Length: 204
Image (tube, rainbow, N blue to C red; front, side, top):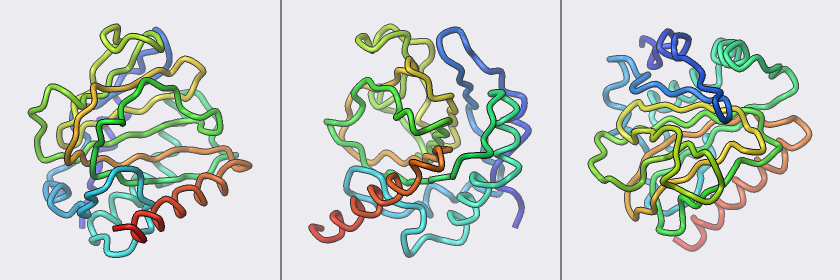
């Protein structure tokens, strides 16, 4: 099976550091990955699910492996000029957006980089589009709006002002998120995601 991620598209994407460092790619998935949307697990409840959840297809597992690869780490370390040696990778999957999602926020200081890949077959809704923001109070004052269409990727460095959010939307919204997390904080992140997944199964 060939590569699912076009690493050259990531290498060549310019980093915008006008407010905080980030870059986006319209579609980083190769022709080998055209079925990823249909193979994405049916997650009909909100929140994040751990990447080691049972039942994932071989191709989804390959995608996770490529996202978490040493080569990807080296590329992102070079692009953002950040040392990722003292980090652990945590990847989660999301399949459903709730009306309470999308509030403006900056990521936890325990994270170093956030990698967000959308896998919706198509996206025609004007809402639910992630906006990289200039401040923490106005969704309309954005640097860039990121498509939620298939293969759309955004990666950003976690800073105090890495504000982002989207207009709320209810329904299916497929994405995969990978974070480089400081090692001293990784275990608490993993525990939180595992407990969240357990509770969803318990009450489903």
